[in-house]
Length: 193
View (tube, rainbow, N blue to C red):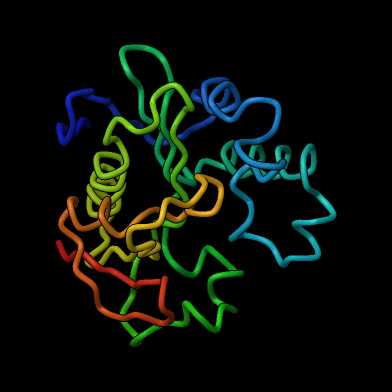
């Protein structure tokens, strides 16, 4: 699958065991951000902290090898340059316990929870392309509603690690609409098939 929202055209694939090495390469030694390995939403905070780094990496590897892709990976030519965590909301225990991001209704949704773009490809307008590809993937797997939890930073520039769920502008460009504003800077957005 591919998307063309920016001048750089990426090709996306579900992250399967076959793509583990590419995922590992993209995330680097630090697991994208401080040993996260995109396990933040899948574990209780105490488990996440305990396994930060190698433990989270092994947990993600096990998840990927289980045959249930935890997200999509984007390539520029043959280089892995982008990641997006996407799946059914119930797959993310921390999201299920969140007061700020609690469900707004009882509809089944797929959630987009984390975006990561290789440093050398940041500020190239790729986030909306990544979000769009994640939504397309979710719809291809039977989702009817895809939900995101981006930040609305206003005119302030936030450091990338603090907006790992994405920015409102990226989701808007990918066709998402605001359905709730649980805090001044946090939105819940949806796109329907």
